[in-house]
Length: 312
Image 1 (cartoon, rainbow, N blue to C red):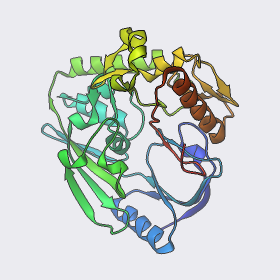
Image 2 (cartoon, one colour; image 1 turned 180 degrees about the vertical axis):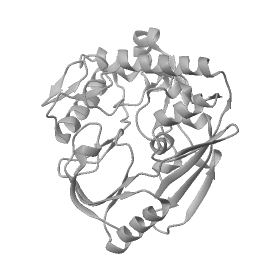
Image 3 (cartoon, helix red, strand yellow; image 1 turned 180 degrees about the horizontal axis):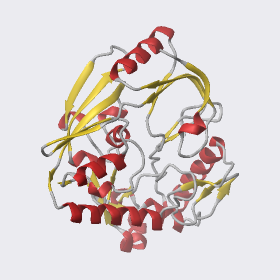
Image 4 (tube, rainbow, N blue to C red; image 1 turned 30 degrees about the horizontal axis):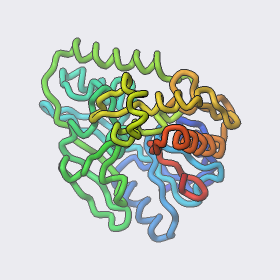
């Protein structure tokens, strides 16, 4: 296997920030992934599995161990089931399902990132969630190399969460159970979701999507609920959009270096050109502390943040 050294992680991050990976390897197959996991264990290297790079913030200092770029892709259809490698893009998945007249994933039109990442974080939008259609997931244990197949229930999906955020396993492949649908109608739904994102989200700048999970209504202090009453949504339970909370805290447009709270959507931080990971982390901390002080609300970050301290 060919291990590369000192590869800039900013090139693999949709935020375009991050220093070099000490060691870097692209795994195109399950066998190559297993080899990489074994090597990291033998050498006692810190390990990070990278897929689409759309939900991670790398530190400016880089990563001191092995970064494995998961490139196991491919999408196949059998009846009403769709099976895909973890590195397949959500666009590929949505388009393939629609081409075969299969409904259940069209809400993800325009969703960035990889299939594996969507499963790991139980990505969702427009009242749809990845967990709604996952039938089974195949993963490999970092330490033992054991291959495991989990059912939907065994994945322990939660709000932007799954068991894969809490165990040392790499998602390799997963199967979705979809339903027959009308191709034209499904395409229309997916295209409307894409258009919505293009209109409302600051896609013209590097970003990692929503910085904070939406806030469950139950976590909004009683005396502030009336203030947000007109903005309560179901996602999949009652929430207040964190973008609205951040906006009402007066933070739209606030900058630290070249990291800015988007003027277009306050739950996005954008890289105006030369932002560093440190800029972004400082801005995240400022948003959280400001919102906590003004509204008594604890915002919870959505992307994985790798800092020198590993804690934000």
